[in-house]
Length: 157
Image (cartoon, rainbow, N blue to C red; front, side, top):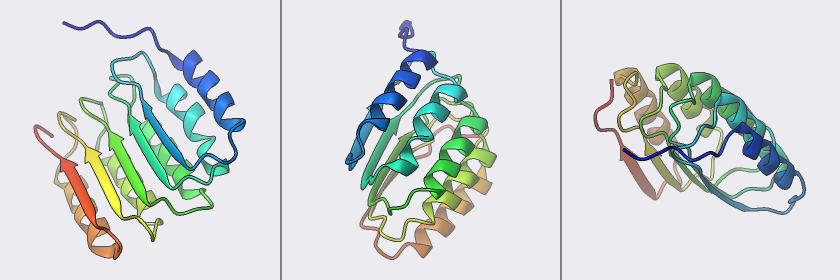
């Protein structure tokens, strides 16, 4: 069994401070799997996103401590972004996220008219059901620029 890294919400706070000092950042790739990061740490990072002119956002979270609360906070921050993201990737592998979080996320993504790539991993999220699947299909059918879709949906709900 792999040990979890000692990365915690404190590191996320430091990362959010770094993002504050990066006003021209257009590509953000942040992978923090198997950590002690919670909803609070995700909120610290997400709250800085609306101040960035991001075109590409890739987040690999994979922490059992992140729940719907964190994903809803991320979604609310995405809705406040002044620019439309072209590429979005989110890895929620084995997270305690349910339909509530995924529905909030799909609602936020529907705001991005220029979204051309979507990569979403919901594998082994035990509380994700067909309701999330319906929202994802609805989202994808309304985005006209989409060119690349990767969805991982194994062993959900």
